[in-house]
Length: 512
Image (cartoon, rainbow, N blue to C red; front, side, top):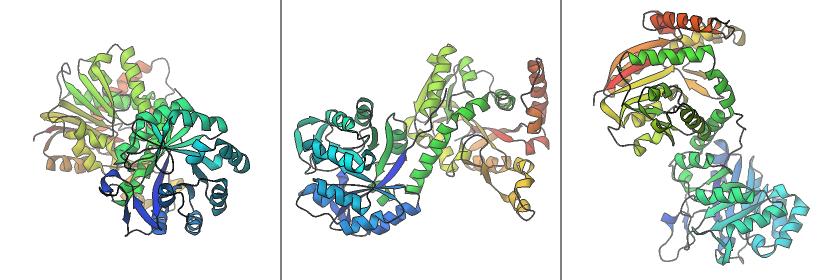
């Protein structure tokens, strides 16, 4: 299956009033007036520069004054200052006329957001597209939870449906839509992904989701919805719920996994990976007599190749991953193998596993090649192990720190650099465009013991050089594979060979 490379933008949202930032979250509006509360502590240019420093490529800027009151004035000087920063700006808020569109473009705006004009004067929109090009415009739809469209005065427009408006503007040439859910008191109340996805599907537009993103899970959920090509983030950044850097890193990591899937699927069929998978299952069976009836959680399991054999042996397996494509592959494989009733796929952020499953829910937790992709690996492991029963087992697999020096290409480094690489605790992934962390068995054993685990065994996977595991194998591949299994199984359980294996596997029992 070919996985297309997607574009997904995170746009920090700057809502401005009287030159100051405005909080439009539902929990910050005055109960009496319904007006947003101004943030006096953050300068708008400083906020924009901060976003750019953390990797923002777009800013979403809205003039709240003109959104509430068409007679209010646009601060063209401030807008020009924002547009002079090294970032693209999309701007909206009661533009209302062709003259204002021209001024926004002259100020340097990359994409003008159209709302009221799209509703009342489609002929003006058509002329503006001819003049400035369709890439200079996006349709901005603010709608109630029922899908009723609001204009720039934040008044409902006589039952006009968001889908109808989106289709009309798409026919005029606009291909980007910013969809925000709005409460009747004029406050944002969160994303509305079902409606956003429906708009994308029925209109043909690329949809950027507005509203109040609460956490990184919302970002992941937006990414995983077809037709969603971006998300606006406002208060969650300003209040420190998470940083823009975190959100951008999350998106880059997701994009890296999605774009790397073709290579990853090819890699899964190599002798090296099949050998590693068989060895890890073999070592685990030293501690489990029978998988029949066991409840297994495969955290970050992708298409479940590590846990599918357990389902085939009678276990009930829940696989949690954030990749829709991988989980689809899992379900397809499980159905074809006749074990679909024993496999459940969950599209969640694995950092929030503790929120989705009750304590004491699982007999076995599989976490293979997962924590090395996350700098907050300790928090991740705590969350993943929360649903594990007392007495349940954890199988943990990571890249081995002690193996990395043997894989350094000396041609790529100077004599001075090479000795310092021995201290390097992270490096590039073999498959994905992302760095991974390195761990030693001793370090992880000590950490697990502090967390209340009893380590039952640690093993080395792929002790022999990669050069001897190439796929140029003759017709006796099965016989050779069994020989390699026998040798690697002996080396992976014996000092000193396991200390420099490519991967470390630890099996531990949860004691409390």
